[in-house]
Amino acid sequence: MSTLLEYKCPSCGGAIKFDSELQKMQCPYCESEFEIEALKSYDDALNTVTEKSLEWSGYDENSGNGDWQEGEKEGIYTYSCVSCGGEIICEEHTAATKCPYCDNQVVIASQFSGMLKPDFVIPFKLDKENAKLKLKEFYKKKYLLPSSFKAENKIDSIMGLYVPFWLFSCDSVSHINYKAIRRRCYSDSNYNYVELNHFLATRGGEMKFGNIPVDGSLKIDDTAMESIEPFLYDQLLDFQTAYLAGYVADKYDVDANAAIPRANERIKNTVLDIMAPKEYDSYVTENESIQLTEDKVSYVLLPLWILNTKYKNTLYTFFMNGQTGKFSGKLPISIERAAMFFTAIFASIASVGAVVVYFIL
Ligand SMILES: [Zn+2]
Ligand SMILES: [Zn+2]
Image 1: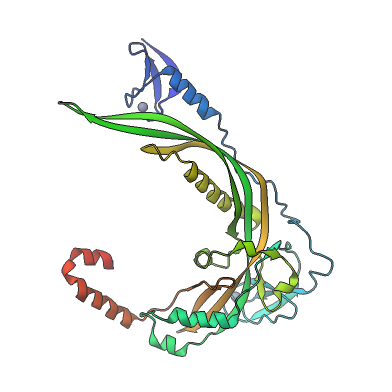
Image 2: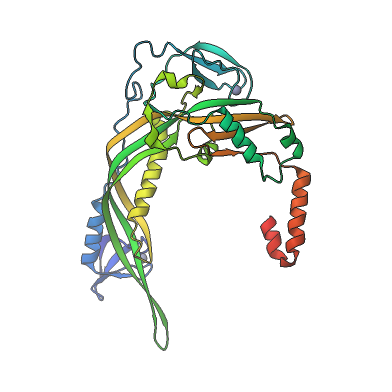
């Protein structure tokens, strides 16, 4: 005779029943046994966590953190590219003639309007000459680069571009329940046993996050941007239009609200990983609540050098971090050189057989 109580098996998730003979709860699916009291406190602990979490309160999409000063906007112009639709802004004395995204001519469109005032900026530390030198260094030791590409070595355009980013900072208070397992193996003369003990590991704590960056521009490839990170955020300065002189700036097209999920993902992953009960043999997150306080979103401009070169009708774009000089880009590959290179590898390690094939594929 069994009495039905509504508990789910912590081991397999199946509905479990009270077994009057055992005087315990037993799962009909995986045969795990549990004390009623243990299950009850397990259930209670699970229910204390409300999953509503990671909500930001601090950003007003219309006014940002502060408005433009009188006259500040007047010196800024908007340029848009007739070829790719890219839009950049620059200060009135900067002549923007080429589009940083597609390298075509840009046309001046209008007096600048509608954009939140950036809160902070990291000004350019490295100039155009640094960027050219870095490109030369970048070509070195690239054995697959066609020699004609290297020989021409012309840069079609080089532009200092401020890329819009959102920076997310907050304090967090977290409560997390992990389902954890401790495994014990033993044997007697007849059998090998695996004993699984299930635990609910409840963790709580506070964590501070500062300046989690999320790209505010769709035009700049995220992977390219990540490849030249990090930026050193301790060098952020209050934004002033004067920093735009000689450079162009991208207008953000991913607004703060659209950027929130990416910031939250990084916060959640970090919290779950740091709090994880790693002393158990295995664990999974059952539920979590991460409340944010002191949350702040800032709109910032980060310095990027973009170098464009055309080779055999294809545009090659290189990026340099304008603060640290970190450089990245894709280069053309010479088919002949690649063939030679792989032949050489085959020749030198042919005896390894199958492993070589796997490696090359
Ligand atoms: Zn079960
Ligand atoms: Zn363009």
